[in-house]
Image (cartoon, rainbow, N blue to C red; front, side, top):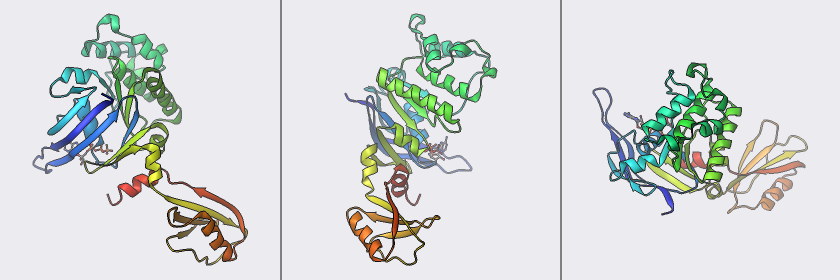
Amino acid sequence: MSNAIEIEGLRKVYAGDGKSPEKEALKGLDLDIPKGSIFGLLGPNGAGKSTTINILAGLVRKTSGKVRIWGFDQDVNPRQSRAAIGVMPQELNLDPFFSPAGALEVQAGLYGVPKRDRRTAEILDLVGLADKADAYARTLSGGMRRRLLLAKALVHHPQILVLDEPTAGVDIELRQMLWRNVRRLNEERGMTIILTTHYLEEAQEMCDEIAIVNHGELVVRDRTDALLNRLDGKTMVITPETPVGDVPVPDGVTLDRRGDGALALTYSRGQVSAAQLLAAVQDAGVAIRDVRTEEADLEDVFVSLTHGS
Ligand SMILES: Nc1ncnc2c1ncn2[C@@H]1O[C@H](COP(=O)(O)OP(=O)(O)OP(=O)(O)O)[C@@H](O)[C@H]1O
């Protein structure tokens, strides 16, 4: 088995109440997540990401479909499938009465981790909270609380770690620390990491593979680099020596003017070559001071694939 997670035909219908109608949040999702990967689950608001993660975590009951976690079918082996996964939730729901060390001990108890297998000090050290082990929870900063949530997700030594919007609203320093920790867990312990994020740059930088969901369906799933290669649109930005007027461009090329007077020519590599573009601009009598090209980034891919939502 090379997959950490196998999802087949997953559906979730939230029942309606008097005010709102029922909602089909997942419409038969199929998704495999390979072991050892850092996997990004992306999608616009309301796409069904949290529903998927909450089903994996055992917090939301699926309507139908199959979910296997580390080879364990959620319906057949609920305990084992739950033990294989740790979730760092979005909300800072921490009990104010427990110190970080206390909170980890309680969590370990909930998961049935025997005392001898508990690694409270080691985990607190990993997330940079060793010196706060016995501090009052209410004295912890927002950043420390988030790190404590990460620590809690790790107490039962899961093979899979799920991070739901881990860096929403956190400062750069904490974000970097979280990512350093997550990378280490992935590289040194082979932990499979699944994350949702609204920061596409972050997904592009962190994830080996990405799935984009929209309206409860899988739109695309691919290696991050392959996904970026899908858009063959490229932009050539030409800064002229002096301001220029009309520039005729070959068919299939769009011309935008940047604020600084530069010409941005977006073209498809399959249709036009960079040499042809440069020649067209020079033929129009433009003296070129500088030329650079811009590749598509994940944001472009995301927009083109979820267009119209
Ligand atoms: N408990 C619930 N009851 C009814 N509808 C729900 C419930 N939770 C989510 N939904 C609906 O299901 C759909 C998917 O929601 P979900 O939270 O999974 O999306 P998401 O991709 O996580 O969005 P976001 O990025 O905003 O968190 C949305 O239309 C949402 O309104």
